[in-house]
Image (cartoon, rainbow, N blue to C red; front, side):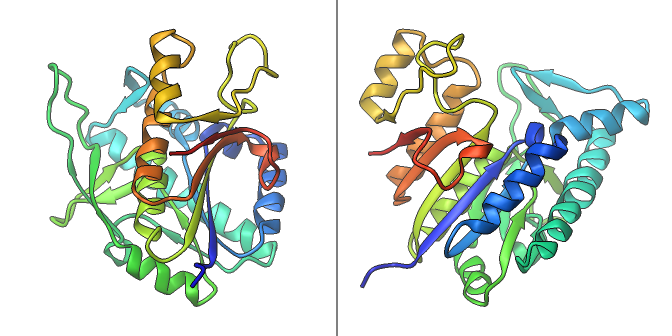
Length: 259
């Protein structure tokens, strides 16, 4: 029997911050046929709120160090401000959205990232388990989950967790129940052959091509973990992963990651 299609869209903080891009994204997301899930970031807003509260943002290799004060900020911003605004906006579009952190209905459990190479990321979670069965039950009821980048450790602690990872883990956990497409939206049209040429989109990336492009330095920096996440999702049964511009949801534009 053919599985029903499910689209998971991950949207970054840059799109969430830009009213015009966000309005368009929500319209496009609403227009996706079939079942869907939205996963959001919100790092820029968290940095802004932290600055207003006199809390310094520390980053290592593009990833946020989350001390106790910053954990309060990201919990408020991701789980509250950004998440509930998106839910309200989707309701206005006729999408019956439900905002979730990993702690809600125990959907994503994680453990605190261990100290590595002398770097302590603080209250940052590495995902251990995602409850795809419960998510699938909600989705079957016509509910659209809106996932914030927060998880919990089962001992009463919220942990800040990378939104790309949340998207990949959610996609993997739902792959047994649906024919899953995972879409990563960001500011470029896809993975670029030449970072200075917005039209030099690489149409397809496989494991083999990824190794090749990485060795040549074509795929570098923050794009490496994004594609590693994508390839891991495909290996775990996700039908396809698309990396594209927020305005290109539902089109054939962008880079397709496939086995």
